Image 1 (cartoon, rainbow, N blue to C red):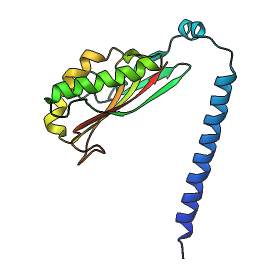
Image 2 (tube, rainbow, N blue to C red):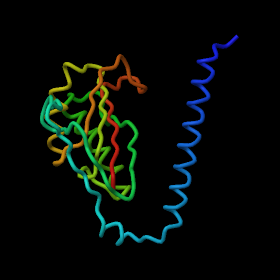
Image 3 (cartoon, helix red, strand yellow):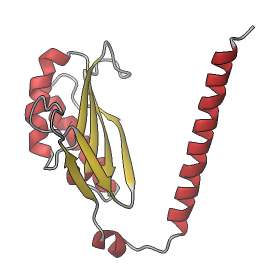
Image 4 (cartoon, rainbow, N blue to C red):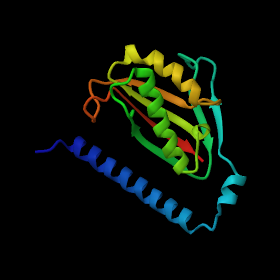
Length: 169
């Protein structure tokens, strides 16, 4: 016998995700049918604004507590890792950012469009200082909102860092 509250929670989640998927489909259909050119998109660049209200924590340079983003397209970059898993961590982080850059470029974006970064570390305490240093070489103000998480393992054997990004173009 299932618990009535749990059953309702599952139904609520299904309703939410169903409506969210419907909204994305309608938005995607509208975007596909919209007669915009690349020149139109270039004329109206994305606008990112850092949100730093009084009392909001800023643990280190290179990120904003929040970002208000306005643009025409959203680019989601799946978690990326380095090319060489045996390289030192700073090199692995640079390789990971380079791979993110390739995906952003393919979408007509760059690091200046990134609104959110999530970085996952198998050795958070050891690797976070290198990450904080390297990201400043790739990111520009307003810095994206950012989260760094320590994990016990990543999906690819031997991978010790993975970074995902969301960009607004």
